[in-house]
Amino acid sequence: MRTGLLADVEAFDHLGVTVGVMAVIIALAIMTGLQQELRDRIVGSSPHIYVYSRDGLTDVQQEIARLKQVPHVIGAAPAILGRALISARTRTEAVQVKGIDPVLEPAVTDVKSAVLTGGVDLLAPRSEDDVFGILLGKDLAQSLGVSVGDYVNLTTPEGILTPMGPQPLPRKLRVAGTFSLGLYEFDTTMGFTSLDAAKRLFKKDEPDMIQLRVDDMYAAPSIAHGIDDGFEGHYTTQDWADINQPLFSALWLEKIAVSLAIGLIVMVAALNIIASLILLVMEKSRDIAILKTMGASAKSVTTIFILQGVIIGLIGTAVGGALGFTLARVFDRYQLIKVPVDVYQVNHHGLGLSNNPLLVRTLAPTVTVMNNGATKGTSAETMSTLRSVKSIQAMYQVHKNLREGREDNTADEFIANLTKECAGNYVQLSVAPDGKTYTIRIPATGHRRTFQTRH
Image (cartoon, rainbow, N blue to C red; front, side, top):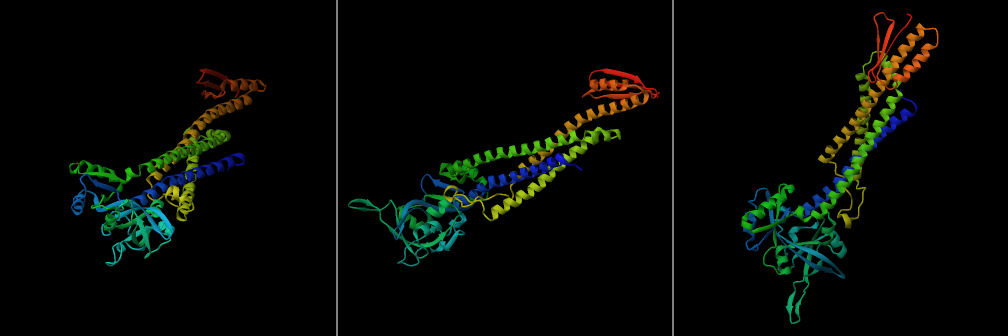
């Protein structure tokens, strides 16, 4: 049983390790959560690879069939991109219009599953007198004050030729539905229309690109390089990682900063354990002396304190891990960490915990550092104390025999001098077969003292 200051120190050790591990888990979850959230939404909203033809996409179906033969490609669809002004009633907003094939587009993006009202199949005219439809992001539709079935005017730079020169001409489109891809940029500035409508709006005879989806998004850069190098230089490509490189570079800098903070937390927790165990060993020097006189070996005494340090580290890690995972799960499930949507593209900061290899790779060395710190600190201090204990044992035995064998006070003076001479050193005490002759030897200095008792 430990009482007083030492008990408080040990309690704070457990608390320090618990808080340290909990901080490590939450920091890792925050560090990876936003990156996972943005990556998943970006990849879901856009294709993995954009393919452009140097000679133009004159035969789209043939180009799609050729690109589908590339290993790991699981989907291909044509697209046209352009910018325009969209207006309804008295409001006008800038919009990026994407012309898609309603049949092939779901194979390369998640737009079909992101539809909230209406549908992709409503983009085509419903009759000869009807106009083309357009899918609007939910925030854009809300800003314009329109819903499914309403009409909007789309104005593009490519207008009609008049005696006064080219003039923009508004085109009437029907709102075919709304969608939410989860990214602020897409939900506030994006609109999808059919490929035929985009050709008329932007006066193009063929698609701008072919979009590809692959079975492993992390392999997209290597697949894109393979397409660049193959097909006799007929294609140029751009992958999702290349397009979003500035964003993920900024997130990488955030990872470095958080990793440094995690390292400092681990070091503080390990040093706390070492300091407390050193105090414990120093306080228990008398108890160690008793164990030694009872025949305990230096190895067994050292093992006791090492195990105590390991137990502190394991208990703190277990409790801190449970609390960290629980808090991170609560924050993630109830979306408690709100962030500016116009800055981070998402309205809350997700915490990534599931299948996170970084978490395992960081927690393992965290526990190892704490336990190793406890082991090394305890071992060093225990061995130092054991050296002092051996001196105490020798002094005790010598003093006992001298007091029993002498009636005067010369024994006290002798012990005082011997204590001063042996202080801090490892002492060897040997007894002759006659039981009366004692020899004290100090290996560190080479000094030797021999004396006899009366009994």
